[in-house]
Length: 179
Length: 195
Image (cartoon, rainbow over all chains, first blue to last red; front, side, top):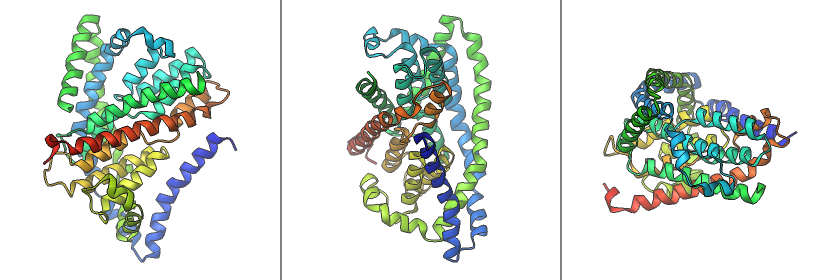
């Protein structure tokens, strides 16, 4: 079995272990699993509604930023020395978009794969960056939104710093492996 | 921080759009994004309810406590403000496992559950606790070991070896996670963030 399939099979088995294993364990312990499930699940809608204002705030701002073309302008201002490391403007655009939008950064990676080829350094670097960074603002909006927190202390700094470290580490690691 | 980022995104995009003549695009994006945010939130309801129900069974059956005591030695070091038998420990652990394996549909509801549990320990509602910041730092640093989305793209593009990126991605994501944890720990010691 190719690694790709093996890894995804393991992931799916873990999901099933959570989803089926927990109720089976509960039943063995004498828990009335159906009633307990329904009781816990009731909060689902309330939480979803709580998140709406936070997500509207973040997604509207992020959507405007993307539509304005500001990412292209920032990309153009970055030093050309990055090019020597194989870091093209598409890679920079993807890295800048990543904390803002998961689907948009995946879209940029798709363009890189098409234009540079799926086995190119750029395509691999983009993939590694995607795997080592996160859609920080989305996660912050959803997680803090669920508990109505607006004073986020240093959580956003930490997330953005992690994205920056992820990008730099990706460039270094890809130079070592694929350079 | 969110105040600054939010205002920056709004003002910077307006200034840029005025300069580049993208104003129409900019304005059109607004209702679309607002609608999208609503759909995403409401779309969470089903999967959220599912995992809240499953986690309730885990709690009532005592599984949460068992899991907590198993991983408490690590978690107590990461989250010193959380008692070792608190349900937040198990919810955070479940979220991290789901994240590592790229199970986003499970990770988000479990993470929200963990935040609810952490908030029950919060004495200053509306303000994040150190444990919440650490949990967010870990989550936003990307825990996913195998980037399925990227591998699928490479494979679809006809790559001869799409999984070649797995190992480099694990190395890079370890750096980002470790730096996020160290940073959050450092910040939690600063005077200005003491309650």
